[in-house]
Amino acid sequence: MAGQVQGKVALVTGGASGIGAAVSELLAREGASVAVTDVDDLNGPEVVARIKKAGGEASFWHQDVTSEQGWIDVVADVMKRYGRLDVLVSNAGIGISVPSITLMSLEDWRRQTAINLDGVFLSVKHCLPAMRKIGGGSVIMMSSLAGLRGAAGLSGYCATKGGVRLFAKAIAMECATFGDGIRVNSVHPGIIDTPIWGKIPTEASGAGQNAPIDPEERAKMATPLGRAGEAVEIAQGVLYLASDASRYVTGTELVIDGGMNAGGVVRR
Ligand code: NAD
Image (tube, rainbow, N blue to C red; front, side, top):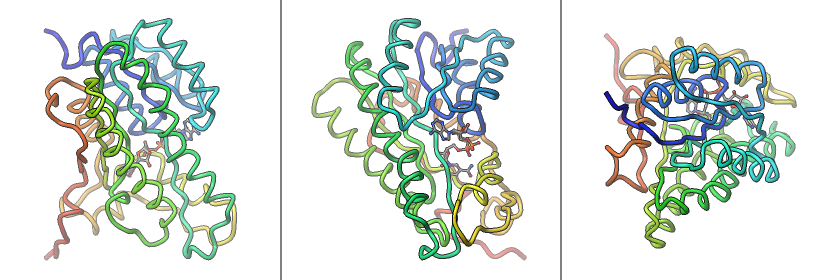
């Protein structure tokens, strides 16, 4: 039976871990050839090995999403290997938390913005021409619940993810104006159990680092469905947006958050 993205070629940034790894594996299982890119040269090739072991097609590229030359090289390489690009999942991101914005160093602000926002800009700048060549495609940008509403301690992160949300809508309008068949959407995960939560306290280089965050503990209280999400539950949403099942969907935001954005619940 043909998979939901059979024959498509997808590029997934931050594909070595968490949501990006789950997305890469699911897209491959559903028939796509997947270019897994990341700065993590240890886990990236392991994701590719798992995909190949399961009978799928994938390759790993070392890529820092903040490097424009890196984007030029990776896109050229992917085109050489697979001949086309149908799906871009601009997923790589970091979170830096400080108790107060007054403790955020300019260096940390810029590092987070460079990966979460500049990286998404560069991904679109360098992948759209390849998609235009084949007359269509799907761009999926990983925003966050923090791109829809504020979160104390994560103001810099919120600024980047809110930027990604509106950037997706604006590029969706640009592509529609060109009539080039490219759809652009953003995905907004809530609290998902991935390695990112373990990295948040150490990402901040300055004063005021927070204690380690346990996503399951946090989600139990904050999430109407009472648990943290799994990376594969985000991957299912990405698969929908990557596939032709969503051919009438552009400029929208897919919230996958266990109900957090809808309101709060009182547990009895
Ligand atoms: P993760 O830390 O497990 O994975 C992120 C990946 O991005 C890592 O493999 C890391 O090496 C890579 N990366 C970091 N900097 C990079 C760079 N400069 N260039 C290329 N790759 C780089 O985190 P995750 O939870 O899977 O997060 C994936 C995306 O989902 C991020 O954009 C994150 O902001 C977003 N998100 C996550 C959650 C959550 O609760 N986990 C919630 C909302 C949004």
